[in-house]
Image (cartoon, rainbow, N blue to C red; front, side, top):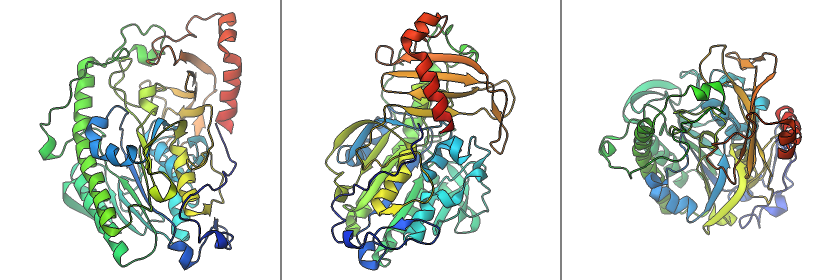
Length: 467
């Protein structure tokens, strides 16, 4: 669902003194910055954005310290999603607040399609923030090329041990476990707040829990809680599913192994998050730091036989999503049941910082009261090979999900080709069938489709895809 209207700023607590200067002149050609003077700048929040890799929901066992801080003392979003369940498209949506069909990064090869002038890091840097990146950036980004609008960075060539990095323009090998390196680099960046009074933005993105899911040595043999699957794992009767799911071969044993490996890698992320909290507390910056934690996509633990992401089933696009900002009134430990997504992160950060973006955004600030009734989730197949998920788009609400598969593919630049013909459809009653076992459109009559409201859903999906 494309939403380009700007949400009114609803920040709490820190704006008292800044309100008088909120009408400061805009940076030419950029954005209007509320309270751009030094006094107002001192009141703007720091921003810590943590994005993990391929982390599904139901992984909180490995994140006790993270959950204890960001969820139990902040906000837990129970209906958190990504709008494309794939690394680069999702991360580009985090940066820009836009759906993939609007920012152009439709697959992992198309990272250079992102208009860097629309990113949250560009707006923040131009507004006087110290900006940093520690960890993974965008798939297919050339390691030797510096990521735009980051003042301090250690860009990771994806891996877990003894990886290649671009550290502020110098490509080098750094020995050690990459999550720990990311943690230490971030802590060093935070320490600079003692002498640099500018507000800061830290984009922290460990490789966990992406394959090959290599744990830190101290967690390599950690016993994880037993898991007996769920009704969708592996779902023996898939006669109502699309062909690629009918042919999926993932087993309960596969799922258990993936789950255990993911949990072990996330234990190191939990250690890092605790270290960030301790550092912010020591610096006296815990109260006025906006912290957001999200995964770039989920992952299927053998659901419907699938052991990957990229599919329109809940495990792939639903993600853990937490927010804390005590000075902004988000520090009490609340549960937020709104449908929220990665496209809402950039609008939220800019709202908190008092910046109005010049480029349109599809997301809305999580600091506002806005509540959507559904979300567009979309995916494009790259290339014309026969493997993997076809191109699809989905209308996702709390109580239902409607999906269409299309005769469409993309090339390495994200350019779309094909007839656009609808090849297969799915409809799930999420209230009575949360595991998406029964596709109500399989062999449905026109009367049954009408009773399900399919014509209206199809029309809305078509509008969302072009919005």
